[in-house]
Image (cartoon, rainbow, N blue to C red; front, side, top):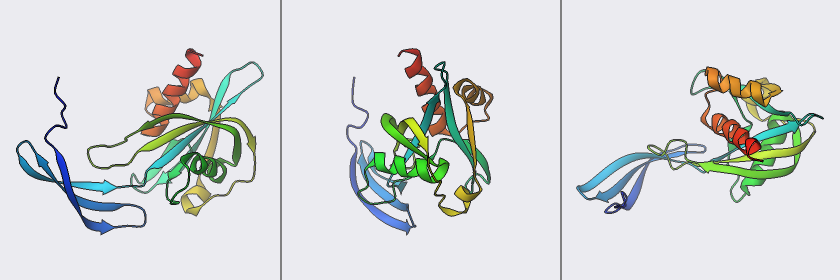
Length: 188
């Protein structure tokens, strides 16, 4: 089997927009057929964190947030998450910070669940997803108008999975986190 990346070489990027967090570049590459250009959104990446709680019988529940997302112009149900916008900050520290900011929780343990590329056709962004375990409540520290207006949902994992199946939860990081948690618990 051949490597589909064989014959491709990244030559350079020309920045065409520099925003607060992201930049847009026109990347130039050699390919088996010649030189090509591609528009690419450069990103520091993000984290998501799924708080998991267990009742006395061991039934899992999760904490999700519902917040307005300007790009979609509507509210979205998702796991607490945020950009890796603090240079040099460890991703687990970013996840812990987002957990406190968005839902007012502190986790005794953060476990890396997965890292994925949400849209590799247009961005170099990756999202690292963590499980937050043995959580306790603390003061919420909302950052910005979207977080100040967000709603917190604490619901059984089975109900959250039902929202995925119905399409009510459609955010990629949330779908991935919930399905991976379900799988992990099934094989524990």
